[in-house]
Amino acid sequence: CSDDYEDDEEDINNYYNNNEDDFADSEEEDGDSTSNNNDIKTSNNNDINQSGIIMTSKLEHFSSKTMTVSETNEFLWKDCDKASVVLSITPAMSRLVLQASKWKLAVIKTRLYKTNKPNFLESGLQNATNSKSIEKVKSSRPKVCGVCLETLHRSKLLALNCGHQFCDGCWKQHMVFAVKDGMSQGIPCMEPECTLLCHPDFVKQFYPVNQDSPLETAYKTHLFRISVSSHYQLRFCPGVDCTSVIYGEKPKPRKVQCLTCKTAFCFECGTPPHIPTNCETIKKWLTKCADDSETANYISANTKDCPKCHICIEKNGGCNHIKCSKCSHNFCWMCLGDWKNHGNSYYECSRYKENPRIASKNSQTQAREALKKYLFYFQRWENHDRSLHLEAQARSRIQTQIEEKVNSNQGTWIDWQYLLRAGELLAQCRYTLQYTYPLVYYAETGPEKALFEYQQAQLEVEIEGLAWKLEHAGEYQRGDIENQMDVAEKRRQTLLARFVTV
Ligand SMILES: [Zn+2]
Ligand SMILES: [Zn+2]
Ligand SMILES: [Zn+2]
Ligand SMILES: [Zn+2]
Ligand SMILES: [Zn+2]
Ligand SMILES: [Zn+2]
Image (cartoon, rainbow, N blue to C red; front, side, top):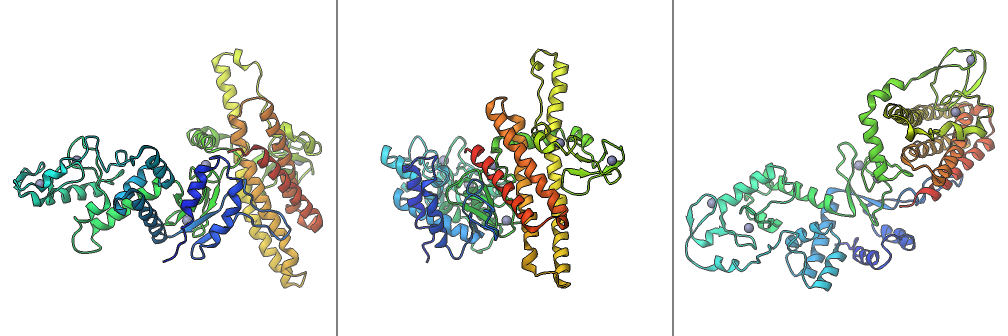
């Protein structure tokens, strides 16, 4: 028996004793507590790549563990055991209490200490009129089952703490229906209006002798779902067909990655990682995009005309710095502006200029302006998304090119690795950039927004610089590209450090 999670309780206590919002001091503990768990896949948050660039930072994600179903079950029962000692009830009963408290043992302890009463009421272990009726079960007079109305000896009737007695057969029917029904919150007592829930020990007596009966399996699956969903430190991996559970030591709205299927998601809300935008805003944005998808589809295009010679150009790379194949004019794909001055005027390219007098206009004009603003940000959001896909294809081409070079004795594999690293860094920077747009869309006009837009534009310049150099890698020295990588990542980190607040 291993004590992998022995220190969790202490951590939870620290969590409540210290400032709830400030984890900075205890951040160092992450390394220690995760290294004890050799059997559980741990993702580290300090991957430093060969060129010394920190690929991920604490601003973006936090340490997590990927657990299998059985590891998770073991973890949950350990919590139940701890709670059962504190509450002097069985582990199965304490499971209901834990579920009602998001599995925060420290909260249960604090409540017990302060009020001398555990939350048996909220957890459905006890009802408001208490359980004097339990004693009646011991009397020997026959009684009628409230459901099937059969008169039975009292020893044949079963009740929860509320004392509502029903026969074995009726309870079993009730369990079968509840389980088939999806049992979203636990199986309630059969008495109408009664708020008590059947704890796992109570349910267990109605299983058929056969160990792996469908009822038992379904019940266990439901119980597992409820337990994980109610646990403040656990999340189901949202990956398709993945059964892994992710454990986050000190939960935050940050990126975690499932080490089984590699799916990355926000621990708080389960959507794809969305730093620097917060959970609430990204939800609003994604809903809006889904609702307005028809409007948006209509404007998205893969082709545009060269602003100088008007030849139709199809964009097939990720870079937004376009050079016309006919007249060699350099222009910006997003705003069609001349690229020459673009480095300095990027602020104008990525910033939507709101009409200052819009409030005085009629509602039709306001609606048109609102749509214009949305489409402006949506186009940029979507364009970066498309660039990410195109650049992913480019990375696999780079891989092939490196193989060819190495095979024809033009340097070693290690010599060309920087190109792949540049591709990965570009993807990371572009991803962050893409997720800056929902934030700006909803931001209130003011100095904070202006500063954000300024830093966003700076990041945009460096990212397109990197994209261009990578697409024309043959024309640039390794040092050139590595410098560009360094600058882009520094810009990204600066933006995150300033604007990631939660
Ligand atoms: Zn009955
Ligand atoms: Zn009851
Ligand atoms: Zn997964
Ligand atoms: Zn989130
Ligand atoms: Zn042209
Ligand atoms: Zn532009």
